[in-house]
Length: 418
Image (tube, rainbow, N blue to C red; front, side, top):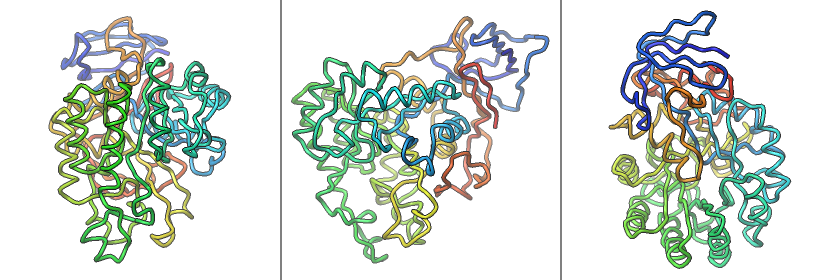
């Protein structure tokens, strides 16, 4: 492989070329040269207006439910969606069938993903079959390559089970990932409880279902001294509690979704089932608080919460529709539309998630392994269904005007351009 990237602005705080416009020559799997002007015979040339380059982006919460639900997303189609969204690294949920609850399932994912253009890291389940009852052999899964632990879209409900899990991962220096949702509270809720739910005649799920679990899990974290990552946080009060926990020195971290930044419960007036997600879209003031937390240092990274659903599970009555939307291909365009600091946003997509989950961050410098994302942060475009590479099309961003276009990735000696 020989690639020449022409006149790209390097956005990488760890690089000696950060903020500079340079040519970058790549040979095989290495950055061969970074200079003002480079000529290279027989190289594939990438040159576009306002071209930016960073180290490859990483997502920390996506569902590629293979095996068992390949009709929603396979490892191959998920990898294609990730690459189209600019991601070179993706952490995938354990909610396959069978679940990623054992060493053999971790090894299955890693073996099948080895030839794909995106690095895929399995999250091992905390409990067997993500049922919330009996702990898995997390030590074996960790040794086989599980990057973190959590029950994915099934948050651990039992405080006793979560307590044991937090203690279990301590010697592994691993992190437990939790979606904050106490399902004993309004388990029939279809959207955020409030004026809008009343007006629409839909049963609501109150914010306290999320906030109680955050408060509980922070106490368990305080007791164990372990590491806990909250993802999908959607309320102002929940974010405030995590902010206070971090200030107190606890090893708490948090990621937010693009759809909680972009939408609120008022957007559900059309009963769009693609907006049926968990945690649900909250009030407009919560949405604004999440946007503020993005760039005040509270939020550590962005999580796509890419949850593909089959056509039949979304094209139905709102009551019967399943939760979730796809998101890998719209993360950057959605978040960047509200970004006030591009360098900070790229850091949340690159350095921060790798640091949280113990991966080498890399850097754009001569001799470094090539793992790059190419993008134009100023380009505005309308996201169309024809652009989707995922096997499922359950996106509420179809038809939306987004800002920030992904040009492609260079990773694992492969060049993939949109």
